Amino acid sequence: MRNISILDRILFLFIAIIAGTEIVSGINQHTLGAITSYTVAFGILVLAGVMLLLFGFELLENPFVPIVSTLIPMMLSLGLVQDHIPGMVNSYASLLGILYLISIWGKFRTGAKAAAMILAMVHGVSGLLLFVLPLVLCFGYGLPYQLLFISLGGLVIGLEGMLLALQKLGVLSVDLNRILSFFPGLLLISTAAFVVGLNIN
Image (tube, rainbow, N blue to C red; front, side, top):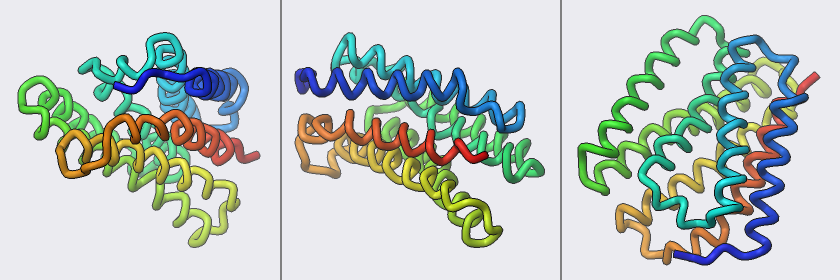
């Protein structure tokens, strides 16, 4: 496992600060349900930033980390649906709930490869919505192009999850340490992109 560097710690600190600032003052203009979803997502990012800063990449070996981190794209995508497609909130929330329960079951009741495939599927559903919905809202309904930063964040966070999942499945021959060398920067980019995309007046 790659040893955490000073630069990595600085990046994780910035992630915690940016996400924490967003919780305190950045999401008040959204609907109540969306604020709740975004608060959970950014709260996990704050916790992840602080914990990774303190304990390093070894924290990623904890079996509960993938279960908790999966909530980030899930809650962000649910918040988007609550903001822009309120009629689909119940259906989408039910789908996410079922997928999340399956991912928990898979993590503790199946082999490592099966669990990684299930988590990749859950990330794929929420990540795809994070990427596609802002594109539809901007180009189809004329909403501010600032929303496209959410697509960027969804693409980056999806790339992170995909690389880690493929490496665990043995499909990707790239060394884990090389993937982890990009992890703090990608997480910072995705966090900042989500903040920019959600702060629409």
